[in-house]
Length: 262
Image (cartoon, rainbow, N blue to C red; front, side, top):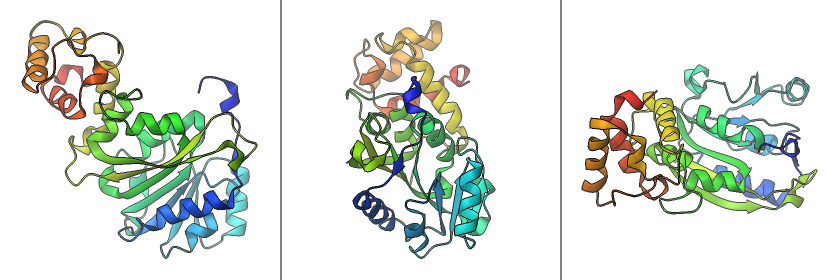
C-alpha cells in the first residue's frame, strides 16, 4: 500500500458480489438498531442496504459523492467525514448498536478499521471489503504467515472471518490485487477493555518492531524477567518470536507492563 497504484478508487460493478455482500450483512443485522455504510461512493450497495429493515446512515469523505447521496437518498442520513477519524459514538444513541459495512479504500483500510472498531460495545458486526492480504492480517492465528499486530489487536476484541475472495474483474477499473470480504463480530468477553483499544494496538506494534527477533528481546531488566515468566508459564519457548505467540499472552504482557503501553 505504499505505491500510488493503490490510491485510485475502484468501484464495485459485479452484481453477484453485491448480492453476496448484502446476504452476508443480512445474516447479522437482527441485533442492530441501524446500519452504517462506510464510503458508499456511487452507491453500489446502498439501495440494497436500505431494504434490510434498519435505518441507514452513510459516512462519505468525497464531497461529490456526499451531494449525490443526499440527492438520490433523501431519507438516508449522509455524514460528510473521514472514516479514519469518525467516532461511532457520535451517532444518535437510538442508532446504537450499529452494523457497519463498507468497501474500504486500500490505502486507508487499516486506519479505518482500527478507528471504527475501537468501541466493540457499540457494534453488532462489521463487514468490510479490503485487500485480501489485509483481511489475512486481521484474521490469522499465531504461527500463520500473516499473523501480525493487526491479528492480535483484532483477537482481543473480535471473532474474525474471511467470508469470500473478490476478483479484480469485479471492479472498475480492476485493481492489481485480490480483494476479500471479511467479518468482525465482537467477543462477549473481550481480552482487553475497549477503553484501552488504541493503547493495546500501540503496544502490539512495539512488540512487532523486530518480528525476526525473539519477543523477550523487546524488554530489559526486571520487565524482561516478568515477560519471560509470562511466556514460559504459558508453555511457549523463551526464544519464541512475536509471530508464534497467541493473543492471550500479549494480553497478559500488556497487563503487567504499563510503561510500554504508550
